[in-house]
Amino acid sequence: MATAGADTVGKIIQSREQIHPGTYLGKGKLDELKDWIDSLEATGVVCDDELSPAQMKNLEEVLDTKILDRTMVILDIFAARARSSEGKLQVELAQLKYRAVRLTGLGASLSRLGGGIGTRGPGEKRLEMDRRLIRERISVLKRELEEVKRHRDVTRQKRSANPIPVISIVGYTNAGKSTLLNRMSGSQVLAEDKLFATLDPTTRELDLGDGETVLMTDTVGFIRKLPHHLIEAFKSTR
Image (cartoon, rainbow, N blue to C red; front, side):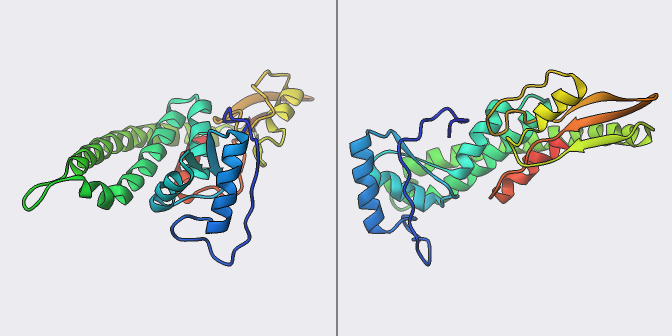
């Protein structure tokens, strides 16, 4: 949470055979969490899992505070860290896809805000407008990414034809990959004690002596429980 700019004031864990379909946590844990929020004066709750639209809505109503899930936090970090044009496009696309799913899940409740036979409620009108704008933006981003992908494929082909060996530093995020690159190559790539301090790959030339040279690439780190629809956002790191 420090990476996302938040302070953790408490942590609560519940062991259940199954996740509660409506509120994620059981009633007893919800009451306990509500007391914690009041006593610690917390301004939000982060769930280390991906919540369904209904679970997020119900938790907000019960706890009367801002609710974030694992995907939202990861996307927020991605948005802050992406530097390349492709990285920014991939992150925005992932954010919009995530938001579109949430809008779909809220459709039934928003449609009850008004209307009658032959009419549509004001909430649903707004919902349809948001859906249309998101769909249009997603289409634009996909076209731009296809163009970027073509350029990337050309670059990859040129790199494959390059006789200089390439070494990739691979591992979990915040494991010290950028620090290792800096130590070995003498470069000054950003290296911080944070998740995804670098979200774009960096390549540096490394002289091994005796006239031998290699290219060393610092890749984006792995992370546990990466939501499936965020995998596309990692393709720009290859």
